Image 1 (cartoon, rainbow, N blue to C red):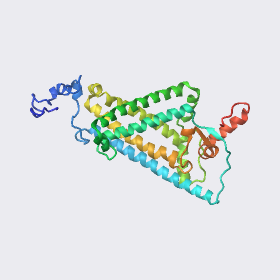
Image 2 (image 1 turned 120 degrees about the vertical axis):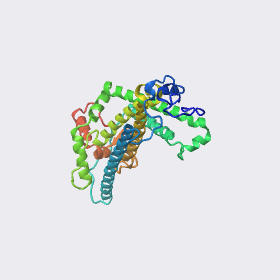
Image 3 (image 1 turned 45 degrees about the vertical axis):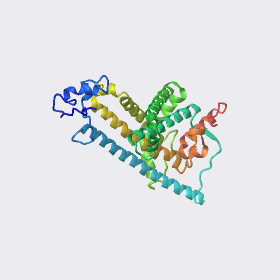
Amino acid sequence: SCHSGHNIKPASEPTSNVYKANLAVTCGRCHPGANQRFAIGSVHIALHAQQEPLLYWVATAYILLIIVLIGGMLVHNALDFVKKSKHLLKVRRGLITEEPAGHGLYLRMTLGERLQHGTMAVSFVILVITGFALKFPEAWWVAPLQRISPSVFAVRSIVHRIAGVVMVLVSLYHCYYLFFVPRGRQLLRDVMPALQDVRDGFLMVRYNLGRSTVKPRFSRFSYIEKSQYWALVWSTIVMGTTGAILWFDNTFIGVLTKLGWEVARTVHYYEAWLAMLAIIVWHFYFVIVNPSAYPMNLAWWKGTLTEREMLEEHPLELERLKNDHRSRPEAESDKR
């Protein structure tokens, strides 16, 4: 359609549809409002350093980032899994005795926080499925949809955009929650990164390697949860921004050029891989596979943690809650 099937001429020919001076008109046939900037950048993209070095290095940087981050997460979690599994086996065999814990339940997530989390999780899963369905249309889990009817697969784009809008909206509400609701403001204070998180990370690695007998003691949020949270914030901003650029392609190609739009598409694709793998390798491990949480940490569903779970994962927070309760016995207890 760009070259005109019955009038194909080389791009160097002034009467060719793809001659540089004619590209705005040619592109405008399918993209109303196309301007001269619209055609800046290669139409047929290949991720080679010689053709499009910017795209090549953006993709290469993301691939290296994925390898380093996800690989580091796998190593960290493997060490954690082995250490905790050995500890549980020793407890089971009576070789060591765990510190006794009460039977109380402690509030971890309010109903509103669980609804925010659930909405974000559902929209994220839908975005992953519908996004990769476009990138890999012949995959075994996508092809059946196309065999049913082309219109069924076409619904994918609508569902993807709806899920994207939902994710942005719940993120905006979360921002309101953080800045205007007292519990949200406290959450923001507690989840802010600190130098102690770096120290805790090194101490945990030393502990899991057997180089130290002292296990770091975490408060409401450990470096593990803080990294999850801020990675989600970053990914939501990046995916939301690049997703909007891809959605309103006519507008943004005219502003950013075709090359700028391709950069956004490349970032969107690789950020999707990074986000999905981080959720699977990092978040799912600590919520599901983690021996101290298996078969699942139910705080996302019930909103509470047992005293045993608090003692294992958040001992400093448990101490704070108990001290607060002792210092104001007449007030409503933090323990539910």
